[in-house]
Amino acid sequence: MEVKVLDINGKETGRKVQLSDSVFAIEPNKHAVYLDVKQYLANQRQGNHKAKERAEVAGSTRKIKKQKGTGTARAGSAKNPLFKGGGTVFGPRPRSYSFKLNKNLKRLARKSALSLKVNESNLVVVEDFTFDTPSTKNFINVLKSLGLDNKKSLFVLGDSNKNVYLSSRNLKASSVVTTSELSTYAILNAKSLVLLEGAVDGIEANLSK
Image (tube, rainbow, N blue to C red; front, side):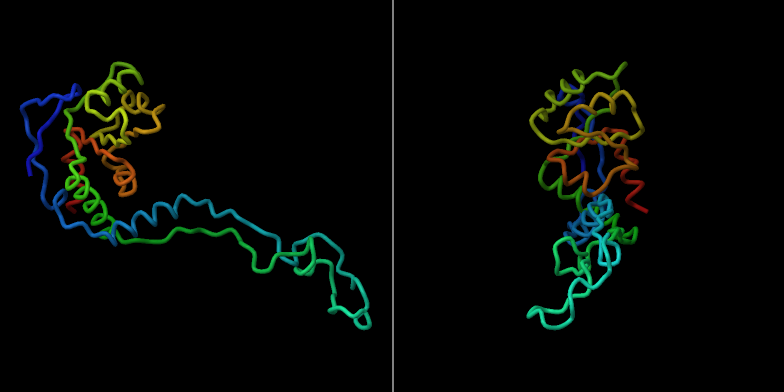
């Protein structure tokens, strides 16, 4: 599959890049995508929730009333979960929500997400660029030239570029990652996917193993 390469002004450079059909043109596996996104979101959870149970609540353990003759149910402690201020029954405890997925499934999920972007015509290839100094204004100009100023976008770099990353950091609707940081969730969370020319080979190398 051939895709035209644009410059940062949104104009065609006259060059085309060859995208591998085995990465960018597969039949999307929606269940693999679901599992990978589910794992990503699960890994974001801190899991530090905690409620005190009966043994952890502060209070006396003395019997609060006599066993019989009160006309009400017997009660042995103010920590009883039925009483106000008592312990919680089977309350939440700190835990990890992470779970394991094999590498092949995660690769399939990323390839499926990339193929979905191609099918939706929301994938653009732009020639490699950089800034002399971090500049949010310059990055906004690039977005406007590509018609992405009002869209959620993800830029994928071939190599780490500090100036480009810092230029985008203040923009909520745009994010910048390298090929090694690319995830299924990041791809699907953006309306438009912008691949720098130098990132194509890295993506294909990572997903063709």
